[in-house]
Length: 80
Image (cartoon, rainbow, N blue to C red; front, side, top):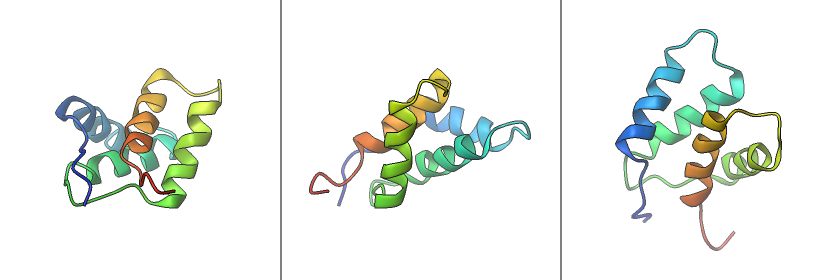
């Protein structure tokens, strides 16, 4: 079990992104992951962890997108 979970503020941002028709596909994907991790029994999967890592290492994404990605990486499986 993962005892880390997404903050209320970041979950709120994620919900707004999912309701924004202009949000990018990557933002929507990361936002969905962040919202699912409000539940402490959820943990970042390997595919999502990889996607989030790529976002963090790229300069083309916004600070908001990187915040979502950072949250997901911080809640990933330590053994991977």
